[in-house]
Image (cartoon, rainbow, N blue to C red; front, side, top):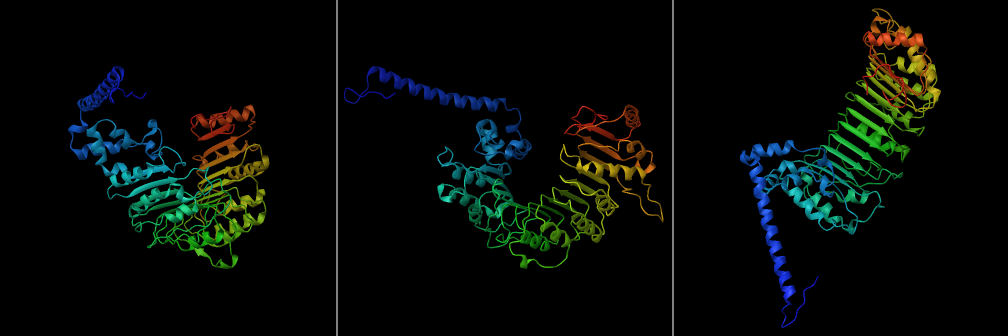
Length: 492
C-alpha cells in the first residue's frame, strides 16, 4: 500500500508508524539471517574445522543423481553445489572455491517470457567460471514444443557463453536443432573432448542437415548422433572407440565405420538408404577390434544386406539384432555368411524380433556361432510365430552331445545361459533331458512365456531340478519373475 504525502511532503502519523515498523522488520530479518548463519557455523562440527582440501573432497562425495538435473528446476531439485552454498557463508565460500563441484552442467533452454530467460546467460557463465580450468560435462536441451526456433529469441547469449569454454568440453550432449548446433563452433578447439552426443528432436521423423565444424577437428572416443546427416559433421574418427548412430543415412554410416580403425562398439538403428548410392564404395571393411555390434530397427530392405556384406569383424563377441525384417531366408543367409566370414568368436547373441524366421534357417544361423555362450531370444507377447523356433532350440540342445576331440561339435556346446521370452512353449519335456547331459549341468535357463502349461509329473521333475541346484527359472507373465507361475523365485 502506498504511503500518503501531506503537510509539506510528510506522511500522516499512521504512514510514519508503518514505515518505522517496516524498517524494523528489515533490520530484524537481517539480524536473523546473520544469526542463522552463526547457528549453522556453530552446528557444523567438522567441515569448517578441517583443512579446505579435505572439506572440498567431502563436498565432492556428496554429489548425487540430482546433479544431472536442470539448473532451472524448483528449489526441491537444486543441484548439490547450490544446496551446499545455502547452508552458511563458510560453506558457500568453500563450495564456490571448489572447481570440481561446477564441472557438470545440465539445463534446458527456457521458453520466451519465463522468469529465468534473462538470468540464464549470467547463471551459465558464472557456473562455468567457477569450474576453473577443469574438463566440462555439458547437457543442453531445447523443449520439444519448439519448431526449430531462431536463436534471436534470447538463446544466443547462452550459446555464446558455452562457446567461450569450448576448449574444456569433455563429455557433451546437445539435444538441439541444427541451427543451434551450427552455432556451437567454439572460440577454441575442444582439446579434451571425449564423448560427443548430438541429438535432434526424437519425435521428428525427418533427417536434417547439420553443420558442426571447428577450426581444428575434435577427435572424440565416443560419438552419438540422432536425426542428422553426417556429411556436415567435421570430426576426426581416428580415436573413435564407441559409435552410436540413429536416424541417419547409410552412406554416412559406412564412411564413419571405414574411417574409425579403433572402433570397439557400434550401435546402428533406424538407418535410411544412402542419399547418393553411387558414393558408396564397393569394399569390404575389416575391423580387427570391434567386439560389440547392435543392429536395431533397420527396416529398409536394401540397407541391411549392403551393411552386413560390407563388414568383416573377426573379434566380434556380442551381437544384438532387433526388429529387422528378416522373415525371408535370404536375410538370414546374409547374416550367416557374415558370421562365417568373420571367423566367428561370437559369445553373446541377443535376438529381439517380431517376425519369426523358418526353423531350419534359424538353426543354421545359430550353428554359424559355435562358440556362443549366452543366447537371448525375445519376441512380442501374443504372437506364437516364434514357438516352433524356441521349441527347436530346446530340442537341439537336449539332443546335442558335448564336443569331443576329433568329432563335430554339438549344437551350442559352450552355451552357459539361455533366455527365451515368448507367447507359448511346447517343448517343456526337453528341459529334464537337457540337464541329464554332463556338459549342460551349469547351464542357466530362464523361460518367460505369456502362457505356461506344464503337466503335474513334469512340473515335479522341474522342481526337483531346482532343488538340486540347477539354475532354472520358468515364469508366466509379461515380465521376468512377475507371473503367476514361478519355479524359481530368486530372480527379479
